[in-house]
Amino acid sequence: MPPDHFHPDLRRVARVIPKQVITPATLPIVRLATRLMGRHTPDDVEVLTLTSGVGVRLYRPTGPSRTGPALLWIHGGGYLIGSAAQDDQLCRRFARELGATVASVAYRLAPENPYPVPLEDCYTALAWLVGLPSVDPARVAIGGASAGGGLAAALALLARDRGEIPDARRLAPGHQKQSPNQTDCGCCRRLANRQLARHQHIADVRSHEALGTQDVRRPTCRPILKLVNSKGCRAN
Image (cartoon, rainbow, N blue to C red; front, side):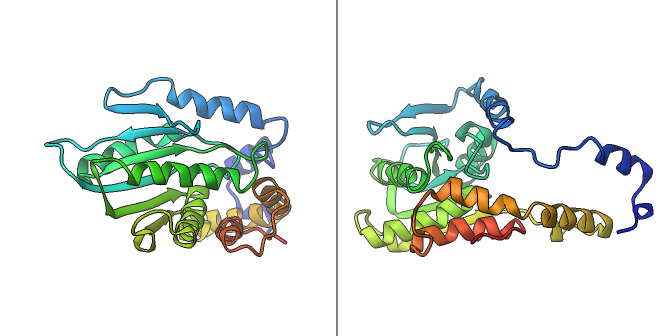
């Protein structure tokens, strides 16, 4: 694309923007920044550690205590970064406006903990959530943003196949993601697509870190690979 298609201010900024945000050198720094989001926990958020060691942030609806719906929320971050605390505001809103018990799971991250560790953490949190006295097992949904959406889809398949959670076949997975094609700005769309094309090799790195040596043909791996592909990258 000819350089004169971009505003001079954009060209100046582009010279100092890193080609990759997440690298082995920057990963600890980015993780530290995301952890800082959870320094101040709102009074109405319960921070729990399950007997398995999995962390959960619990958000209860206001009003009289009664059995009702529930949502297991899985945060995003490309499987490498992020924390359950980053979605405190969103999960509190879910609990308040939907009258649902919401649990945000602090699953372990890749590459130190490749698949299926994060998925198993989410499964443990789901089984715990379904067993709460305030939760109707027939009215449970799972959802997540970005990478959390991939884990939500994989979790729905895993719960269905294991058959250990009541009404697992009725789980409703949801997925929130953003795409550069959703913008109405042609210049921004071309710039985003150009950046994605430039970094297609990230998919191979990310899929390896998230899945480890697992057989990618396994059904629960496919949502994770699909999420990588949805970012405009290729995965083998």
